[in-house]
Image: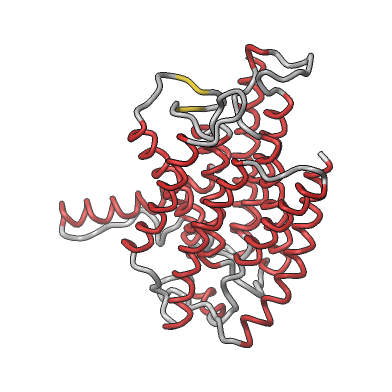
Length: 361
């Protein structure tokens, strides 16, 4: 618990101060955000706002985790290094996308194929390492070959199927976070809630770990997870780094997270879900990301289907992702963000409720 508290304190301070430094550094070098032309008109004033602020979240969270772990007498576990692989791997893909946008001053960065190729490489390397290596003394590897909600269930899946599922989770979650990052403070605030929830989940798993010497552990309800406390420390660091960043990212944003932050956050979330055996539960805890992604998919399907049938494409929403739809309806951006934070909080509370109810059952 000391490591978690220290990690939160360090990540908050580093992110709060580091973002202020980054704002001036990026502004002096002209690293300004290009804005999509078809987006809400109120967003056009954001053109030129310093971007790639997600770099501060990555560096603050990683530094806080490493410092807190080592200072309290521990050492980073295999789970932590694998989570860092996803965190920074997806962040590198996002950084390349952001840099191209800034360099060309065009909202089109990496091609969709190039971005997907980068995410796929990171996901597959993580998948192979986490399922085939780094077993602990109990024989538990970072990732399992079963589908999980709060515990593994069903039959053991072939490795190729597991790698496909890991690929889907990493790409879907990182892109879902990326789609959510479209309004000042929306992703940072929602991510703080989501990673805070995973801190609670991992602490609980650590206290109810299988083969634990604690007399209170019920073996029929225990969790077969490797290094959950390390996952909790890292999740807490990411949540705190998002809070420190939010101070400067709240409307009117002094800096924008960029793809380097959103893809990294989504990748780390997928890693936490996979290594804590809560892949299906993650769809509830991070329900806001699912909602944003589904709005884009439904918009595309509706437009293409109606265009093929009638010759005129019809859209369900005025614009997707869905938070932009409400801005087009006349909601103020701050109103949209706060209400979507409430939605994210409801999903998080529901997910934690399911997790605890599963343990009680």
